[in-house]
Image 1 (cartoon, rainbow, N blue to C red):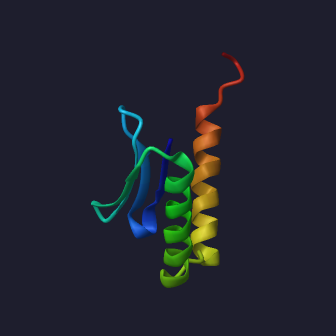
Image 2: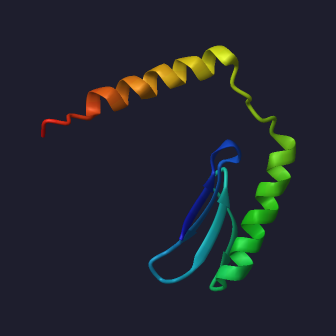
Length: 82
């Protein structure tokens, strides 16, 4: 299991030895064998960060640019003759 909340540099990962590790900004916050407790900690930290970090809402221009880019990618990546 690997989860991330990129804006807060928050990560939950399962190591090869079965230990779940929650890290934030490269600092270990929690290390446990319990997936449930690691997930609970990750979700509580994420909820806190979501209130602290302002959410970026794309402008109409950014949305139009994204749409044009994605339509261009899909049109080039599809060939009905193959």
